[in-house]
Length: 227
Length: 118
Image (cartoon, rainbow over all chains, first blue to last red; front, side, top):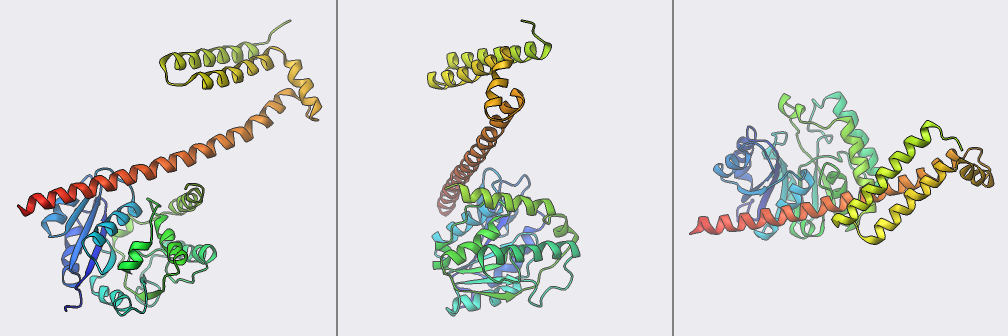
């Protein structure tokens, strides 16, 4: 059996018509199938992804990265994924790292593999981003008790069972924190795997702001009230 | 009894709000119970405005000097609570919209794939 059998990649994309094709091409050799969730893009993201050979799910309106990932995971499971890998649409992640994340899940050592850019891979994290991300790590430690080195990395691998258990209800950026607390809630075994995150002008322009961080806190608090 | 300008202004606003509530009931946007509740609020407000001594005496019972201060002390927690409930309702609505979006997206994908297979 080829190493990538049963591995389906899920990419949430919003207005990534320029970046999505090379991302799909890079992933092709590493996975059995690629699901691209077009989160209500105003550009040709869905068409580009479809032409590049991905299975495309289209949200008619923009709901947020968390919502798009949950939709993609649902479809991947319906298509028989044994392992679901989430991957960013903007070219920040490196496809060659996929086997590193799949390995611990495939061997049964872990239910979830979380990519970490601070475990030795990336060297050029912009100072402002680094500060924000360290803040996220601290926040995660305080709220979930889980000691992660990178709490906000979209590069993850889930076993089929794990992907079926976690429920992402946070539509927007707070979903990253929600995934971590879901891991805790279900007692899932996880490992962190060093991955490289590439910072380009393109992805930097799309990055999170400090205001975004407060929005995440607000969303998490609100989420506690809604049931 | 002499009225000052602020009383006129407030009474005009209250009258407008009360008429608006009645219009909403007539249009069917709100029910009879809701109308009664809102009219009670506006009539209460009118009483406080027309008889300022009333709120002053009531405030004195609570150890608050000015009637207007008492009104504000009561109104603010109520408003905070109302906003909180609104935020929760908005979040719930957002989640429902996402569920609908997801269902629609998955159904469309299913149909497109079935059509492509033919």
